[in-house]
Image 1: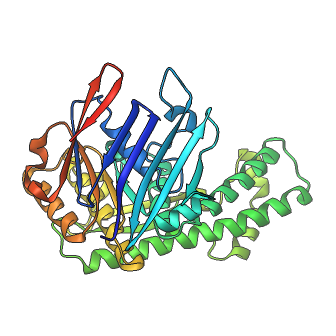
Image 2 (image 1 turned 180 degrees about the horizontal axis):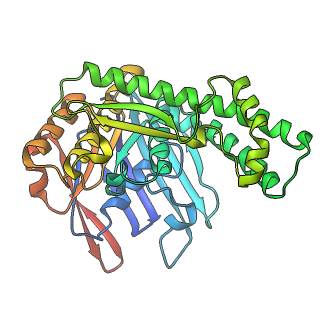
Length: 365
């Protein structure tokens, strides 16, 4: 077993008052009616990695209502032959905390142990909506390879917010900007480098894979101009752009202006112009490539979360997806409304059923 949750306890989280799951490392199929609480289980698993989870919700939003006492998740994580007791929780809507083997830990510590990637229905419009969603998608992939990527992103965003405040106040004194631009340049260069590294990992994984899913040609582009390649170049670009930025009231240069451009490689068609089914297949391909690249880099595939994965996939594509997940050896958690969507998996997966009870979600096997 490479990487898997073998036990999971969910307490006062979303619609679940209490759920205790025992798992064996195989893929996990979760089915039940819409609104029963299937995705909430996947969201709980996503919190065994750094960040705000697959829904990007605040800690307060995750707590079960009406009690609003806070929530707690605990699990036994098997990682390459070793077992770790993981706990993460929030009290009264406060920031979530992490404990590993009964010792306080950071989310970066968690990210070094548990690599988790996901695909959910809200991502189906990735190629046709705004650049922010594509940056977030790419940054999540970068974070899976480098758990410190979030630190750089937070440092950059904090410094940029302060710089934007100066811009809106029409401050023109260069001394007010110098330190902030230095922080932005250093963090921004780390972000840009991590994104390029993530794309290199994905390209390599795609090139080496035998897969039923289409390859994507991916490129980083700027909404305006070119992204400065070094820390010093970015610092100078920010300095030179001050007067233009003052007029705009915001920062116009940097990695927050990056977009991810994708092309369906076999057809040479931009991803945004592909059919709904083709766009879904490209996303599945990228998640699988992310998983393969992580398996190559760290020696084990990540935990893979696929919410309503059968949407827009025909029976042949579904069967191909399940075969690839099993060949990879990944513990994939997959949701759907009925067991027929996972018939091709057979005994290769274990099944959980989620229903809506009188006191919230009920999970049974």
